[in-house]
Structures are given as C-alpha cells and as structure tokens.
Length: 135
Image (cartoon, rainbow, N blue to C red; front, side, top):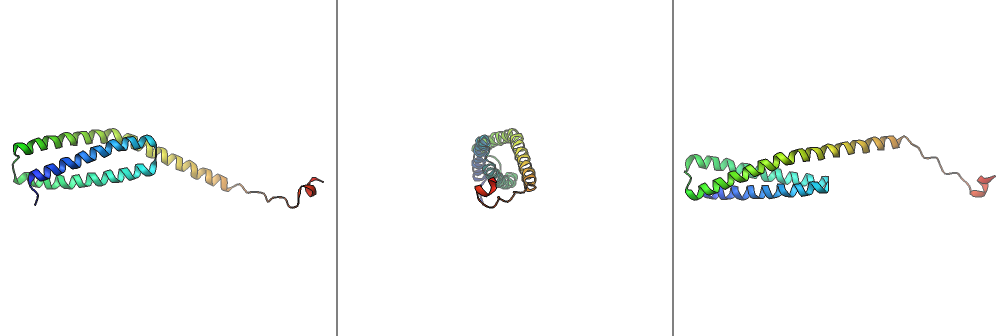
C-alpha cells in the first residue's frame, strides 16, 4: 500500500500532467483539427479519471494518517495545481463547445448539399462525333 507522501507525490505529478495537456489543447484548438481535438479530449478525460482515482485513495489515506510538514507542502502544491486545472477547464470549455457546434453545423450543411446534389441528374453524352451533331 502506498504511503500518504507517495500518494501526494503521485497526485501532484498527475495534476501537472493534466495541466500541461490542457495547455496543449489550447494550441490544438487554434489548428481547428477535429480529429486531433477529439483525441486530445479523450486523453484528457483518461488523465483526469486517473487523477480522480488517486484522489480517492488519497482521501482514504488522509483519514488514517496525519500530514507531515513535507506532505503539507505537496498538499498545498496539489491544491494550487487543482485550482489551475479548474480555471483552464472553465476557460477551455466554451471554446470546445463552440468548436463542436461549428463542426456540427458544417456537417449539417455538407449533408444538405449532398442531398441537394443527389437530385441533379447528368444527361447522357450525345452519341456520334462533332460532325454528326453539327447538321
């Protein structure tokens, strides 16, 4: 079983990784690549799920142990990282929602255009050569 200090160290590392990834998503949003954005969001969710799991173990461990002075500094750093992640999530969510709405609208326009184009029929090419059709 991991000690309280080990769990705090692990949690701080995970939140640093999440924060770095969130900052990377902001750059990817500038490129407007929907596939890359979706992959980054899936990876972010997986990272946050791992951090949440570590936080559950940490909460149980905190009930049994007391914080040492060294662990308190890790705990403060963890809280600061959590605040930064929450702030970045708050700022990033509207941008992601807007991008998803834009992509959805573009897909709808493409589908409407494809349906409209399917109504047009090509006329068969005239048979014969240019001299037969000229007279």
